[in-house]
Amino acid sequence: MKPNEPSRTALMIARQRAAHQLLDHGSILNDPFAMKILREDEKDVLQFANAHPLASIGRMLSTLSTNLPARSNRPSMRG
Image: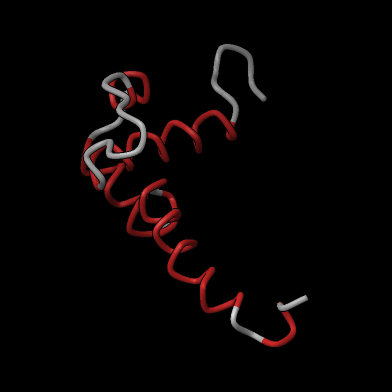
């Protein structure tokens, strides 16, 4: 971490929150400050989101919820 600069982890989380606001319209977490705190262009956040499809919280949760029922039906996953 460099002095007077946010950590890489903080930037990643900020981008995820901003991507969620842009792509999912804040459906899970309404964060009106995400883009302001990040101080990046909308275009850059969308590029990040396209490069990292699970960066959006909503996309990640919908992917998980879609895949969970399929996994629980596998014989190896049953008790």
